[in-house]
Amino acid sequence: MAITDKIYLKNHRQIASQLDANIPKGAFSGATLDLVFSGDGLAELDETTRDRVLEFAEDFLDCACDDAPYCGHPERKFVRYLLELRAQGLGPDAIVDVMGDDYMLYAYPGDVLSFLDSAVRTLEATESLAAVEGDEEARERAHEARNELAR
Image (cartoon, rainbow, N blue to C red; front, side, top):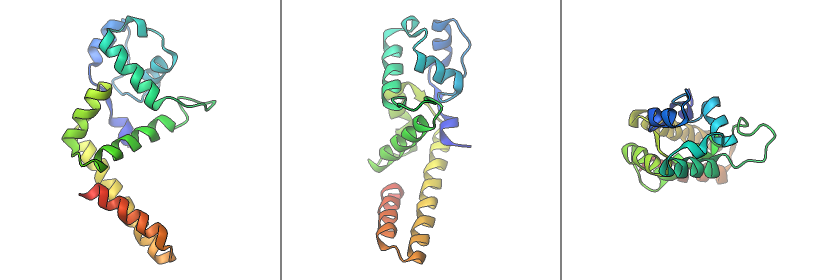
């Protein structure tokens, strides 16, 4: 299961109540993306929530693909966002706090830790494969990226 499947709307009940609609808790679920991408009902949200939803849309749903927002770009952008937070030295608890402040999203710190651990293991494998292939440049890039995440 991808990390984006474990990212939830922080104030789910409040948002559902303001919209007077049932919406899933998952930030990257189809119905939630439809709501944010189409903009239907955003006027019903309080100003703070609307601002965070619009920031989320601008940062992750800005895509010109025909299949947007179902093209996979929002999820990849969010994964990049999480990795950048980790590269800044933030741990799982702090990452959860920042994504809550930035976008009113929530994840369990254990899920974030598992994602980060998996990313480090993937980079270790990439580094090993690059060494076997004799691609020193790729090995070095993977090594540096792994060191940023593992600190």
